[in-house]
Image (tube, rainbow, N blue to C red; front, side):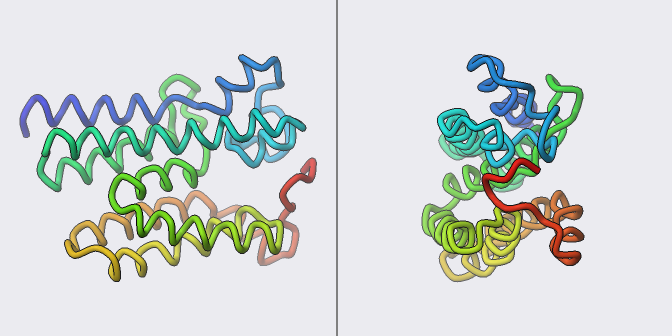
Length: 198
């Protein structure tokens, strides 16, 4: 592995480690998102603070960091294994942020950013699925889970390079694993809805 490739992977992890939920909340004078609701530093939980702008900025920031990391790797014409490592590194940075005691989010927005850099068609498909379920049933975690399941299927359809489709499957699996507790609450019919305080 070249020094450039190694450094890009490290940079991707550091980019992923920027918790926009915590940063935006701090800048806007809101409570630490780890301290209320689900305790998850993500847009859905930030929305529970009552600030829609803060939630929107968190969503945008988390998506952008996934997009930027992978886009730069592709711009540098790095080989697929390195691009795959960069995509996984930015996700791991979000899950286990160096700057926030390794307490990160569930990766939905960041995964969307990664998908956008890999294939806008796959990204748009997943976003559409998420919106339909989120707006219809008001359950963000369910929308994320279904979108994650759809992602590899959409990747197989839209992506000519099946190695990239495999990468999408890995990213989707990472998101599903991070939603383990949500899956249990869904099965127990205890999952909270978007906008609720819990």
